[in-house]
Length: 101
Image 1 (cartoon, rainbow, N blue to C red):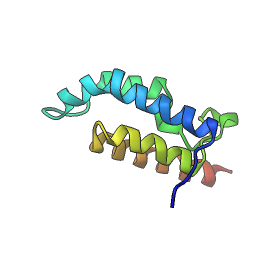
Image 2: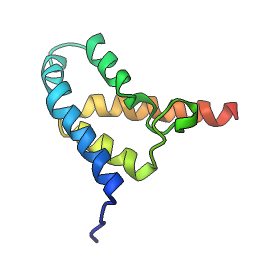
Image 3: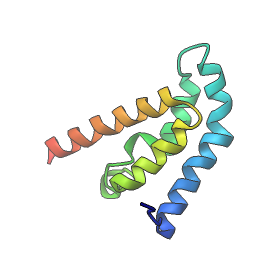
Image 4: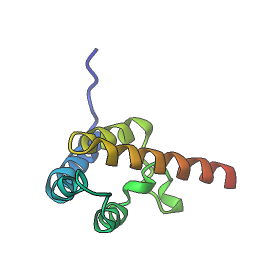
């Protein structure tokens, strides 16, 4: 089954791919030998990768589940462990947001 992406979905996928390849890839290479660097975590935070599922009205990106999957997929192509870290962080942020409502 082939799924066609909307223009918005494609833009989100391109944003994540660009970040992964241009900004994060050099950091990911260092990460293979060490822990995730604070600098990379700051860059990910600046782009709001940690709050993809949180609504924009609450300071997040307000992505749908399928858009979030595209983001995680693009990051995983460069570094699986960092994409998992962000997936867990987003899951926790989403649970906290729902419980606070």
